[in-house]
Image 1 (cartoon, rainbow, N blue to C red):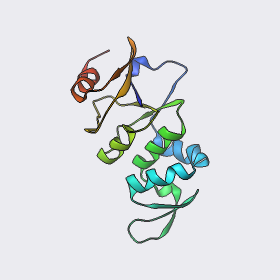
Image 2 (tube, helix red, strand yellow):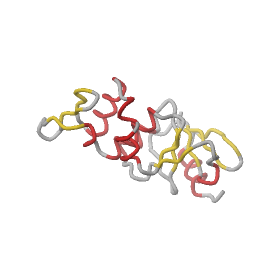
Image 3 (cartoon, helix red, strand yellow):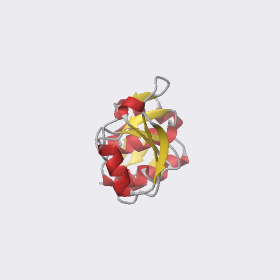
Length: 146
């Protein structure tokens, strides 16, 4: 399950990444494997042809993998870098559904950003970590100040 952090709960040992596009292009792209293909298909509706190329969903043109949407790159960052926290403020509903279904990963956003399909998440604030399995409870947690 994913862990959602409040800003004040992010320790010095965890790094918050806000420039997801840049981080992906510099670090995550080197880690891609077959897991990435399904995520790329779900979010950008493109086919991963190789580690560095995709087929455009619009006309099948072969593109460099850096042409993925920032949203898709954010999800791939979360999957391939479980030791980092990624800001999800640019993500849309399709990405949120994927993020909330991940087996692990760390995310942050200043305001409630919740998939209607959420099952259970771990939340981290100044009081520690705990699990939440209800949309309304998560929204309330997210809206309350630390």
